[in-house]
Length: 278
DNA sequence: CGGGCCACCTGGCGGC
DNA sequence: TGCCGCCAGGTGGCCC
Image (cartoon, rainbow, N blue to C red; front, side, top):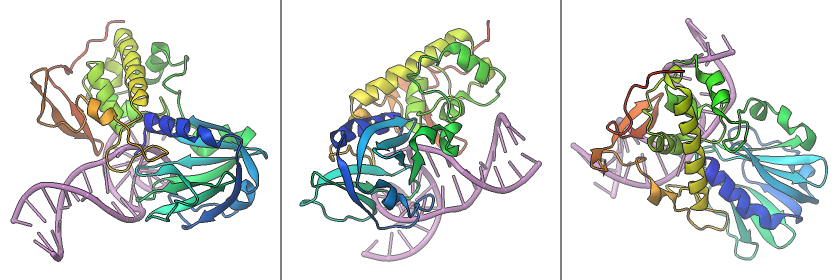
């Protein structure tokens, strides 16, 4: 489910747990994408949540001991806060964190591609799934120089490059299509074909689309809902995603499959070739 | 190493 | 109604 905007929306919603104590953890599953570390209970129990933030698509809860909890949502994971009295275990609730203010933070994930882990807070950047991440889209170090260095020798189509978390972290399959439409770049354009102007433009579109999606509370199709169960609204702002055969500005939208994932684009607006001129 | 492909898992939907 | 095939906000591991 979640790309950066959904993860950020979740992180925003979680802030009400700041300073609150985790009184217990209950596991209803032993394995999600990975085995759930058993000692996660010992590590979190009776500790306060001091900081809640994200790295790429990973959600981090920094605890009052030296540890942090790490959540990843995979394709269908989500976190939800309920009052203890209202809470009913629903299908695919795998992990419950009991919070001292009589709330429950539940992790639900039908497809089990998500995971939960812990890390020593100071060493979180050494985690194998964190260390390889590229720049955050909102990091000021993300410039056309950076992108040019990373992709100017690559034959890989830009759609796939946007999904490569080692280059930029946070973009997923929905926003990749929406970003490329906004930037008027064909999804097939190989990395080496993009000149500095196009890259500047692309970075602008990345930030614009992601910001807009965050402002709309993310995208709610299938599983994703916010921390309190409310829906995101960005799906109503899609220009191309899920709009095969519909028209935009009078032009047909197409769906193709690249690397096994759907790409939606408008061939008339996202022209196929760009000449390198730097 | 980079890049391409597949597996992991469950459920919803459309077609027959 | 039932079954089948296809599709789904991700990513790690296996190949070459």
